[in-house]
Image (cartoon, rainbow, N blue to C red; front, side, top):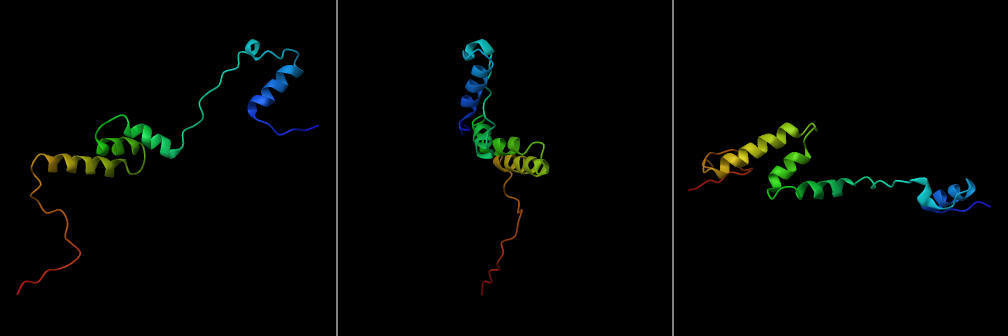
Length: 97
């Protein structure tokens, strides 16, 4: 009879069919499950107290790596007191009469 079970159930069944039901004798090694994207992000954010650096490290090796590094450099420049430069124009105009 077929039965639906877990991976552990299948391992126990295979061990019993092989003649040794004691799993300690088989040297079975369990590996951690792969992390989800959200778990990877949270793990990366935990490595640094600076969220900008964490985001830049998350984007390493992706097409957005250069953008993240440029943004991080811009933020560092801004923090040094050189933030009096205009970087963008607001999407509206003000007319004073």
